[in-house]
Length: 399
Image (tube, rainbow, N blue to C red):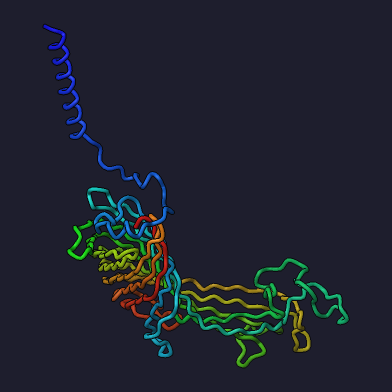
């Protein structure tokens, strides 16, 4: 065999082996790496608007990991209580946060997303009642002015006293804030969704159907406080042998917990226009609500040094009596339904970063318990609705 023929045979064999190796590698190639998230990390690279206009919608839709944060200002509806003075149609302002993290698999056009929404509404009717002793002389010590030490001067100092005996920081008199809640609730919502990205429509809109699970936790607080003293009519009753001056703060409270686990379906629709991204999202959920409420009465009695039917301005507290009645528990199960609607406008700042603003509506249409069971104070139904609606503003990374 000539050298030319031998060389040709060896090159042919190498080519066949190389082709077989490439075919095997293609058949057993690993799936897309879920941790492949723009390895160059050029998040702040400027955006060329001309380049954005030339990209097709599918090319502009990001893949890989993404994350968002939004500040929420959601107004919440009031509870349906037995008290006729509470208006159920009023909405009270609340504040919260929304966090999102997820992943869209390149080439597969499918992914997972996790969302956490936290929002609180705290509307309280407050009445300030001055304490019988204008300040606690044991805590502030004696003054050093022309008053002969009768009144305190400067920053409070002196003995260490219990928190209940302390002077109110920043004020020149002691007082009690007597609270009556009108709308106090805290909501936490956790959801895990599987989504699919469909082909763009004729005008560039993209639809992403989703299915998932949602866990909602709503805590409702209902408090009614009352202030009484021995100098008011009618005074509260002490031991018949008691002679002195005292005041009492009585707290009746009902704390209701709602644990809701639901299945949900929905979609996200978005469309690009130059640097702007218009998006909307709808989710409907339904499931069970496991409810419980805890009612309890607390009494704090403050007893003062009493001489000639007068409590001195700086009189120390002789004793503090704290009482707690045994708590009363009640529970219930309900079927609940609801929906979550969002609309947003985003503006692309850099290659990966955009800011956005919009609105959100969360409506639990039925199956929520607020106000407690009415054991101690006006209670509420265990089959109420809760509405949260308001504005959002946030930032997104690779969304």
